[in-house]
Structure formats: C-alpha cells, structure tokens
Image 1 (cartoon, rainbow, N blue to C red):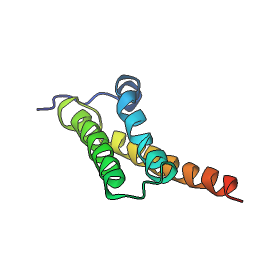
Image 2 (image 1 turned 180 degrees about the vertical axis):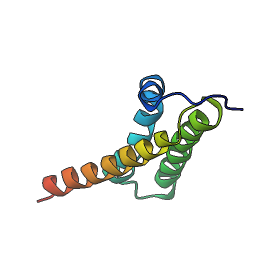
Image 3 (image 1 turned 180 degrees about the horizontal axis):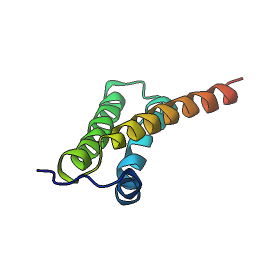
Length: 91
C-alpha cells in the first residue's frame, strides 16, 4: 500500500492528469446536455473513471489527504464556471 506521503506540491505536479480528468466531468455533463439515457451513461462512466483515478493516487501513489481537498475544489470550480458560462450564453 502507501508508504511515506509526498508533499502536496509534488503530488500536484505528478498527478495533474487526474485533476484534469476530474475537471472535464462538469462541462461534459452540463455543456454536453445529454437528453437520452445513453448520454447520461457516458457522464456516469466518465465521473467514476475520474474519481477512480483520483482515489488511486491517494491509495497507491502516496498523494496526501489534502490532494482530495484540491480535487474537490477543482470539481466544484469546474462545475460552477461551466454553469456561469452556460448562463451567460443563454441570455
């Protein structure tokens, strides 16, 4: 399992693709606006795959627990910014 945890700064530079994957879920979910059931299945798969990558970094790749806080902030910020942009374009 995990040994000594690495600092947050190093974890961010190492595992940024996991954060990028997590940041793509809200734009696909809100921006893509899937109307049928298969579209939502894609969003579900993308969400669980990105969360799976994120938890993998914490469980097996020695990322610190604060990495989860950053991941939550990235996900929330991505969702809020997507909703703001969509709201601005729909006016």
